Image (cartoon, rainbow, N blue to C red; front, side, top):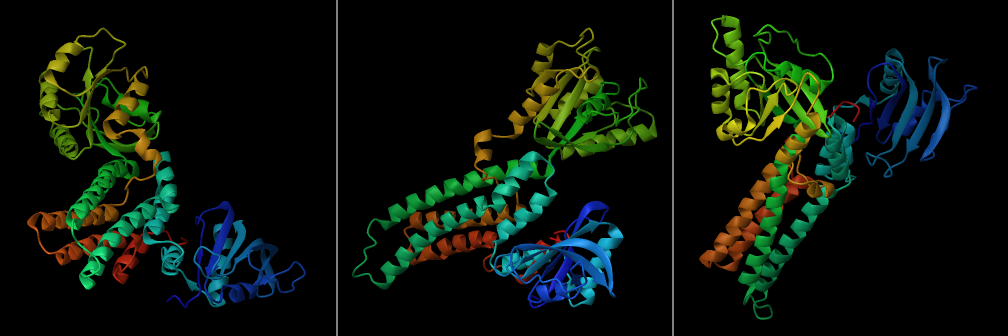
Length: 457
């Protein structure tokens, strides 16, 4: 497969100013040369690396498009192979025509993620950096974009290499001492190793602690809005979106089903879900909506309880207050522009959740709301500036495996076991961290990871 020359559309299959056809492999330059010409019809020379040439795509003796062609010779390309990129006009039919020419002249259509897969297999990037490419493309907010860029530049892999080097140093000392006990003493080494392992565990724990933040950044905070009918839930959603997405009327029970939208508040990504008003009802459809609302709320990262400050607390409010007890929640005392019938101090006796006064109709309180969410979910901006936030579920599991192995080392030390027992778990931790970088991973796992990439990447 690596011996094949591959091609794909590297830009979206949609009308655009520019469409890029990428060809990579041993025969990339030769294949592209077969259908590229100068303005006068002569063969366009594209052999020189890292040069951009102006020319035309020809098909059966006729010019198809006017293009720019960039050649990158191995190993100075993204894939580490000879690569040719043809910048043509971005018509869907036109780019497909150029792609078909590349295939007709000897290239094979690339599989999803095959360009990045080749970059990994050719040693241009490690596996964690390859995964960052996919994250960079799919980033849905500025924080996810920044972290993906940091990881592509090696922030995570650099830390993993450092941890592995320290593990290997201790393991190498044990192996050397076991091989040459006359010249290398192990006296006092168990205490030193214990200190080293505890420090490694602290650093692994810090990375694992960041994984929850990483999930929020990558996927968004699953946020469910709860409240009784006409409390202002849909008005809140519309205020956050900046458009009339949810229907708002004076009729109680207007919202019958869940409505999900993705929004970003000052860099905080929320998967926000509006739900049916919580109340006892004889209406079968509305009752299903209430049940669905509570079921959706069960798995929420954050519950936003919208209380109508202009009305006294009712049985529905009491039910919601009981539901959010011991859950991560915010209480919004809505309709602050009207005469208030609910005292905030009384609410504080019923819930430990933060309480904010807002007016969804007037757009009052949005800044305080976004700041409160940031405080609840992000454990301080300093850590994010370092770029060391784990956003990949696979990385998280491997870090947990490495942590478990190092805990076994400590356990062996506490039991006073022989030093050769330490090396087993030290090298297990070393291997688990290596899987993050792509060392000794199975072909099936590599194929699974890159199958999730887009076609031209």
